[in-house]
Length: 310
Image (cartoon, rainbow, N blue to C red; front, side, top):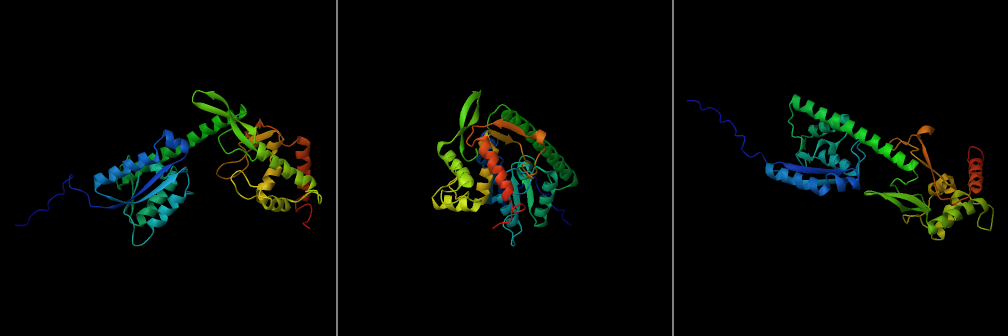
């Protein structure tokens, strides 16, 4: 008598797999108010333990957007996934949005992993590999992408209004300035630019060198200024040596003459925005407007397309 095959029980433990965790937050603020890295790791490890999977690698991406693949840890993960023999069998994330917020990129990279025999698993959005599950994952990814774009739009609108009111938006202030608390609105601290007494003297020195030189010759060129500052031990606000690009940025930054421009370029592409999108705000003056204009005229005159290099 032929015996019938025994159906597997749903309670039967799943085969042991090797898991790589990918954990991500976009910003430090998100780590405080949203799902932090330790929270994601704790939940992912508990999920793997319940499945009987071994966590063999952890990739932590702190402060990186998921709208593209320009993320160091993500690149390391995908490189590791392509190695032979394979280092892990599944990639575990808290949600698909931790992996990608672009539905085309999500599907593309899910397929890249699948070609290596690796599955992407979301612990909060458990889906299979059948057509209906794939369609559901794509719908979830489309919603995540839409939500990401809406959040970015609302954030930029709030930052533009903040700049219109004369407040500084979170990023590192230009060389020569520091930020100080201007007022509090509930839990939010509004900041404004203030002249840094040490750095501002270096800014004035740079303009003086370009206009009049060091007393031994006429005005110095950008490369000569870089060499002089570095030789004398001057450093940027991060402690780095000066470069030609840094000095050129200082000499052309209108903030020093009292007008700072915000929302000038697209964050991703670097494309300049239309003039009606740019927000201008007052800034403490380090360089008089007349001296700043004089330097701009000379820079324009000395560009290689106008005046050939010596």
